[in-house]
Amino acid sequence: MSKPLVYLDQNIIGLQLSGGLRLEKRDDLVWVYSTEHLSEISRSSNADQYLAALEHIGAKFLRLVLAVDWKITGTAELVEGSPEQHYSDYMRTKIEVPVDETLFDPLVAWVNGGGDEDLLKQFPEKLTAQISTLIDTSAYDGLREQVSSLDPLLGRAVQQMIQNGSSITETRKALGVAKGRIGGIDGEDPIAEIWNIIGPSCGSLTRDQFFGFDPAEKQGYEAWPLYLGIVGCCGVLDILGFQSEKKCRRIEKIPNVRSDSSHIAMGAFCSMLLTEDKRLAKRAYAIYRHKNISTRVLLFRGAS
Image (cartoon, rainbow, N blue to C red; front, side, top):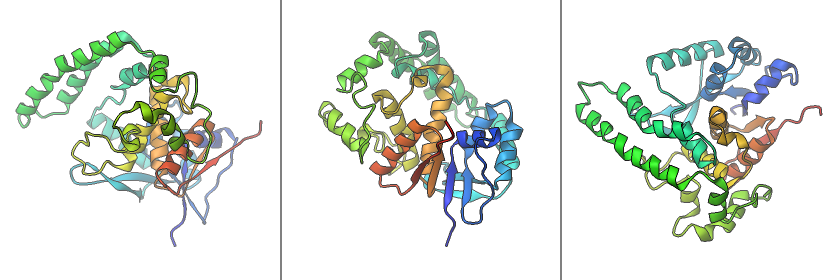
């Protein structure tokens, strides 16, 4: 019988470093971390200490299994190697394939009622430039022409967003969830309760379509991967105000918001998700409950 996998939120590793929690290697379970941990570690000032903490507890690296066309297959696997080795591979890949992970942050902040208009205006040019750097000019001339046409299209879309404004209050009011109406929902199936409130305002959309589990445009997938569905659902819950934080309105904090959603999504492949973040725990529970995911959410409560 395989050992239970316990996914550690990044804040748990931080507690291990500070002495607020003492985890050790276990024979009866496997502590796991993912690429998102490596991303967060790369943004920290003490990468070596985080890696040493993961090594100390014998944590294993869990990654998504991709098909030959780089599409997500819907499964994840444990990969041999030390945290230091996986971090080194991650950093090398970032250099070899320079993808700007913050590219969409101005959009995310804007739809959540914050952001910066000037940064939003720069988005179309930055996106087309990013795609261009990833395309070989000789092999993808036709595609490069299509990419160049994106700039004016995106420019018009951005201008429309700016004209519409970024009032999260008005957005929530239109959906019937103004003034924190759903922030405190804490029932057996929170997402079902939320849908009972906003469903009448959503026309022909199904619940899974609205929450991001079944998007109309599936980008070549026959069925939308659960991992992407969970990440998308977290974005929707931010807009609605369910267990969301004001940091989702601040561009400099969007990487942290993105990491939270990825941790919840990767936790779906494990037996348990351990976190110190009460909001993340409640959101993970709501999503797992809605999609009948068996992962247990464990909230660590330190000494107060």
